[in-house]
Length: 445
Image 1 (cartoon, one colour):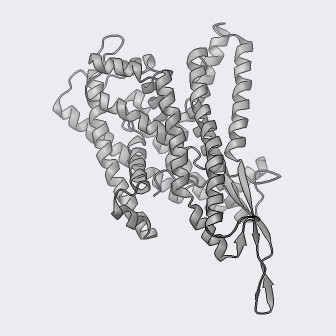
Image 2: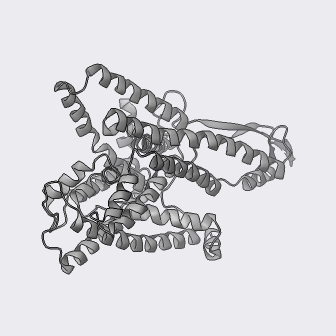
């Protein structure tokens, strides 16, 4: 295994891609630690320490701790993901014919769609940065110390401009990582923000055991349960439903072609972490809207208490959004009619199923059922560990959403690394089989 990892640096192009990815992640982590001028660091840290088990604390984890420091990257990639969701929904619902035409124009249309997504990201980043700036100036810290001692119009303008520029830079950085590095850039930035806190979380758990605030047996049990959940997540994320395909024999000239057997692989969880990331992004919209009214408003305070992690309504909405986006992603990424037509043109057919429309209906029937199982599994993993964490006070790294993102992004990145190695006649990371990957792209239209 160690030898296979060292093979990565033996290939010049692959080594360049890996180093570029690591350098980009380092730049992102450096920017996440640069605070915006005029902010009382102790006060903002006290607020997020008190809110670490709430939705704000979760958003802080998603931003890699940048929000808790109120750094130049506080908004993270959320505006870009929200813009991608809006563009995908508009295309999927066929609301704007112009978007449908761009989607069918190939590479040129994809570039125009990406440009529209960037403009929408700019608008959302400006809107959210303004709301976040207002909320910060009105947030009461636990010690009564104001976060901003002198909130002037100059401070508002500078902060909104800085936060918006930070989001646009992260969007550009993620796109560069996708094009010139390994893996999906936006997903890797989210991944880096999550794993950055794992060492401190593990250290805190060990400290609690040493101080006898938590039992050693209980911690070992939770560790074993965590490993078991990771194994199950990896198993489901790589699971496939293989539809057998038989190719008819054809005589072309003096040679006979076809007659081979193959299969059509359909993943149980085709969307991967996309559904989870999209669901979390939509859940932040009410929080962003509430920021405009300030945390001191009684109505906003009640709403924040109601719309909090651990609340059964919040968990139910979260699970339903995950299931919706699993189905939505499959409807956008897989077209059973096109699959059936391409299979028919190449002389392929599913044994016992007529080519053409019956094959498309059969593929759609199979896809709907495996998607239901995969969506229910992802929703359970996303919600149940978070609920147990609130009830049993388990460490942050056991969060279901974080677990799904970390495992999913790691699998896809390893799959791309392995594909590059095999393409250059190197062995893969596994002795038997290959690492399955989805080749998804957050924000790709």
